Length: 194
Image (tube, rainbow, N blue to C red; front, side, top):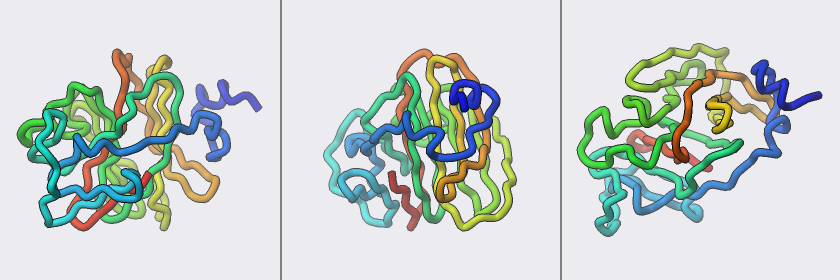
């Protein structure tokens, strides 16, 4: 079984196919919107109705409930997230706008970011440059998403992960020009865990 060929043919079927590329991520509290609470060693984010006592920081999202990971990624990387409620799982260049609440700040609504919005047990919406793609899949209780970045090949793939099985959702293709930072938008009373 040749992993390289499998990726080219979008024939990654199991989590173990990508385990070699697993990376450990941590949320960056200096980027967290003030209604986002970080826990579990900065590996879980929850949106609350309580303003968090974060100090002012130029990297912070001021009007949007988004947070970035500390790690800027290049090369081949795979990570998984578990979501509850409503969440947007994205990657972005570091230069995404952090001030205000316009499209230039939101994951997937500009040319600096790509995202997958979890809508329900059987539907997702993928976004890039304010262009949505609806993805319908068989209903599942799995709220886990796997993300595989092959930076030099210019591919970013999202999968629904269930036990050891991966269901391909979408692959974005682009020419990446700088490191990509995983990030999350989290709806009220919802959470994302790395």
